[in-house]
Image (cartoon, rainbow over all chains, first blue to last red; front, side, top):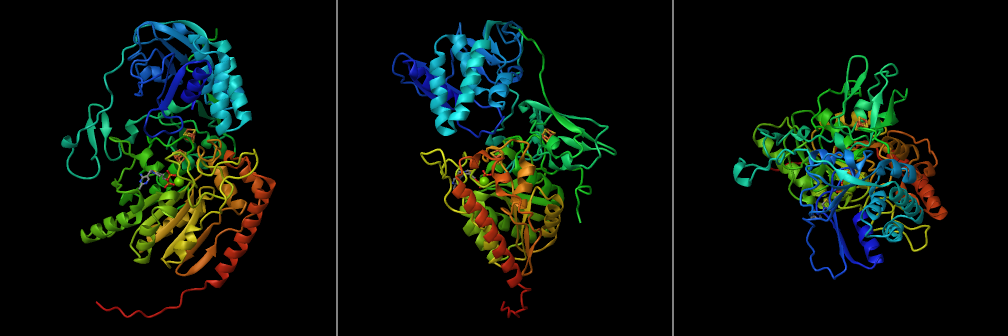
Length: 287
Length: 310
Ligand SMILES: Cc1ncc(C[n+]2csc(CCOP(=O)(O)OP(=O)(O)O)c2C)c(N)n1
Ligand code: SF4
Ligand code: SF4
Ligand SMILES: [Mg+2]
């Protein structure tokens, strides 16, 4: 929706613009891609954007696993949601960077960790191509119509706050990315049958029972923390955790973080309140 | 009888799946699989479950799973069971996990056929009350008043959403007189596990309908899934029942908590007018009275001798 709001913002400011999501299954919190293209001339290219001028990264943890500069045009800029200053970003090469702590801003204004609208404010500030009024028009049009005026207002407030808080600088080089980490066998490589059989590959286990190869802990915004002294070992958190992130012990349960998506259910079902949720911040660098 | 404490540590639906945080559907599948155990084959139609459990080349089931078409759950599972039986593996449980769209609407004819033939499978519908995987479209089980992308709000800010009441799928299955039909809610673990146990142990066609709150489609907080599942029962909106050998039992008399307590936690009901809320209150009362009357009326099935010609 934010890519769409950006396109509306651009058209409000007199550009012609187009936006579309990456086609595929989306899950809340899972990494997704969306594209916006705008310019002064009529747009005739309708493909995904492979060589962007700007890359907006909504979740800082992606920088660790994906080379967000791949395809970026010379002189292009990356805009990241992080508590870090732009100069503290470590990327695959030096690049113009802008940063803003959009998660804190979004939590404050919208009570949710949906940072996309705040990042539109950051985009306006960092690029100077779109006005803040344009961004507001975009949010009103896209969010106001589909959700409610009240929600749209809160998102506009988040965009404004992010506009003010965005810092510009240059990200550093030095991060090395592993080559493709996913292995996709071709039909010829697979034995006949309906399911992919369990197999060990250089990239981990695949096939039946292999989903643990896919760490989902990076989706998390808040993390559950257990106070062992309060745990009565009722096992409700263990029963309910949709991601199997809690194990049972003899006296108390234990929380693991590789797969925990931070849904907060374990804390909600814990009668003695032995589990609470905490905002997870990797490194605090306030300007 | 399985209680939470005696459930095995072992999971057969594993971490690393890509369901949204707080997904009720993922909880249902994880718990049912804990009870069913390793000697199980899973069928899934197109649904959120298929997408979040089977992301090629990864798969979250520790047992064989397959998928054919959206509308084929019951018949595909039945085919697998017949084949296993032929191979001398009649002890293997075959389970189909389907969404409400795949059950109440598009999978209905295959479901009805398999139920009528009393195929030896367990069919679990995880009911998140809309077609979630394709972006929240209404299904037959979407409740009255709920917003979905295909039951939009009116031009005024109040009112509208879905105009029809929820389709009563368990009652349709009861009409097939299969050995076991039950509803369950994540909010009542003991009742839920008891029903999965029973369903696992029986032969013939078994149907479980489990309410599976979806934080995304219901526009609710990701930590409210269990609360919602409880409130749905306590308000009387979702009835816990069991139909076994012709006898219908209502497992819990609701506390009749005001329906507003349930509705207010969900953005999909935010627009409801006072008139619509009154209709829901009325519907809840009527439904309970009718379910009670039905439970009274349905006694044990008389034993009718059947002449089998082979
Ligand atoms: C014949 C057919 N029609 C439509 C689709 C597209 N489709 C895939 S998943 C889905 C929604 C499934 O809804 P539901 O059964 O309620 O499961 P949920 O995603 O809500 O868990 C649809 C419409 C399809 N795959 N096949
Ligand atoms: S927050 Fe709790 S319930 Fe949710 S995934 Fe993490 S450990 Fe599981
Ligand atoms: S959309 Fe709903 S049902 Fe589908 S994975 Fe997300 S929470 Fe689960
Ligand atoms: Mg559904």
